[in-house]
Length: 345
Image (cartoon, rainbow, N blue to C red; front, side):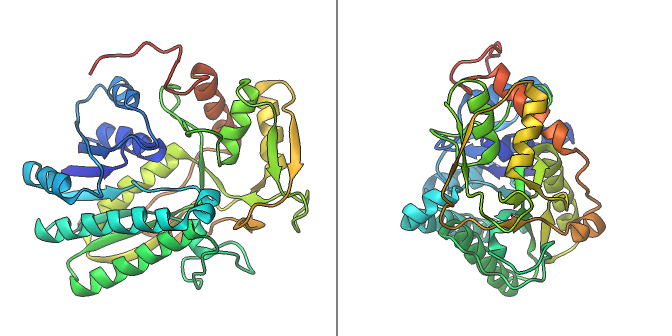
């Protein structure tokens, strides 16, 4: 079975490609390296010992994407590619709507033309917005509070219309909570451009000396310690969820949304203290004002994915932090300079 993975050199995409290859799938990666690095490809092959196809293309380019569909017998698509920072989306909403919506439209047009009906979409828990109750269930009314989340919500609605027009489509909407961690080898991990937008790479970059201190955005939320609470999930557990979604899509038609999370929430200060335990020294931080678009508490009810996908997150917060730190300490400057020996592809 050939799986086209858009954004397959990115953080979640690369880990998913590893798990796909290890599970015996044929993988075709498409990436433009806007938020990833070419060295990831060598690392995926080193980890798995298996070959895969790669196309350096932007999925907004319909001509290039059509060439790929013409030359590869694509059986299913996992769509990761997209802009993904909440704060940046507030500052530049037009870019987010254009990139995230139009790239998906290009993919769906080509899938229709080539009769590809198995589609796994990288959605987000941000589609829930600021709910009055937790844990978050898939049937809650959706109300994204920032352009990034609204772009994901718009795509989910668009996919619902696509399924109505073609009931043969099998679509999984995977609503991620907060992926962290890295492959246990330390060869691939989260490598954000510039200053990280997410908590864990921010912590690890402070710990490795790239940044002076951690900025904690908001310590006046209605939580036990005043800091925001999120559901952190190991990126490998998340990757395995995509394989389970592919399998279910192959067995039946329809469109379903699934929460991929642990069902447990951890505050920013709790995560910081776990990293201090892992690293063995203090990590300096400063409290800053809340960021626009952020919410106080978000964690999943993952029971639907547990039951229908036969999937469950198995790695705990401590192992997530240990794997994140292994990646960062082995690769202090990300993929630009690292202690790892590169293997030619």
